[in-house]
Length: 414
Image 1 (cartoon, one colour):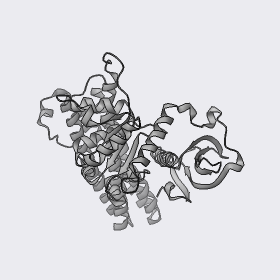
Image 2 (cartoon, one colour):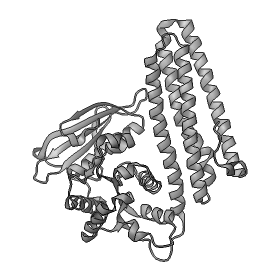
Image 3 (cartoon, helix red, strand yellow):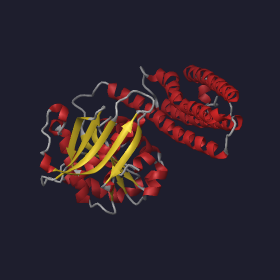
Image 4 (cartoon, rainbow, N blue to C red):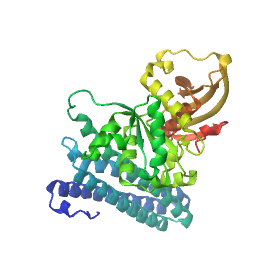
C-alpha cells in the first residue's frame, strides 16, 4: 500500500512483517469493497433508476466505514508487536510516521472509490460526490486521532507497568501543558496555583538537567488529576512536545472522567475549530476574560471534588435529589438514538438549582419510557464540561443526536 519513509523498516524484520501483514489485510478489504460496489451497481441496473439513490448511499456508507476497520487492522498488525515489550523512541516515531502515511493513503483510496461510485451509478452528481468526500475526510481526521491515541496509550501502558522506584511516585493536582512562547502568562498562573496549595507539574521545575524528557512527561501525565492546556497561537502550531502532552491527556480520559481543562490564550473560536473541532466545543477559560484568581478558584474546587468522589451526587448511589421546589427551568437538553439498532433511547437534561447554591444538575435518562439513571450536581462550568463530554461519548458510540434545546449558551452543543 504505502511505502515507509523510514529505511530501517526494510532491514528490521519486525517492522517489515508488520507492514506486509497490514498490506495484505487492507488489500483483501479493498477487493471486497470493489466487489460490493460492482454488485450494488448491477442490482441498481436491474431494478431501474428509482433504486440508484438507495444503492449509492448504502455503498458510500460502506466505503466510509472502511476507516473504522483500518484502525483495528493497524492495532492488530502494528501495535500488537509492542503489547508485551517496551517501545523505544525510534519505534514510537516510526509508528506515528506509518500511521500518518496510512491515513493519507486510505483517504486517497476512498476518494477514488467514491469518484468511481458517483460516475457508475445513474443519477450520480457533483453535489453527492462532494458530500461523500467531505464525510470521508471527517472520518479520516477521526481515524488519525484514534490511531495516534492508540500509540500513546500503548506507550503509557508500558510506563504504568514499570516497577515503581523506592517510595510512592509523586502526585500532582494539575499538569500544565503550554508552548514555551507563553511562559510569561504561565509562570504567573503556576505561582498563583502553588500559592493556593495546588500541586503543579511544571516543566521548568519537574524536568532536571540530563533527564529523559519523554519519560519525565509520561510520569507527570500518569500521576496528575487534571491537565491544564493553554491553547495559544504558538500551541496551535502543533509542536512536538505540546502535541505529545495533549495526546497523552486525551488518551487518559475516560467516560465521565474529564482530565483536560482548556484555557484559550489569545486564540479565537475559529482558530480552535480549525485546530480541533472537538476541543473547540469544550467549555474553556479565557485569559482575556477570566482572572488568575477565577481560574485558581475553579481548579481548587474541581481538585477537591476529585479527591472526594463519594461526595458527588449519583442516584445510583442513593444520593438525595433536590426538592422539587428547588428545581429551576431547564438550561438545556439533548436526545440520542441509535439508528438501525435496538439500543435504548438516551436523554441528557441540564437543570438549574434554586436553593441558593448556584449549582446545576445533569440528569441522564435511559429507555422507553425514559427513566432517570444518574444525576451529577456541580457548578455551571463542571456540568457544562460533563454535558459536552457526554455528547461526544454518545456520538463516538454511534448514537445520533436528534434534538438539542438550549436556554443557556454554556450548554450549546452546535
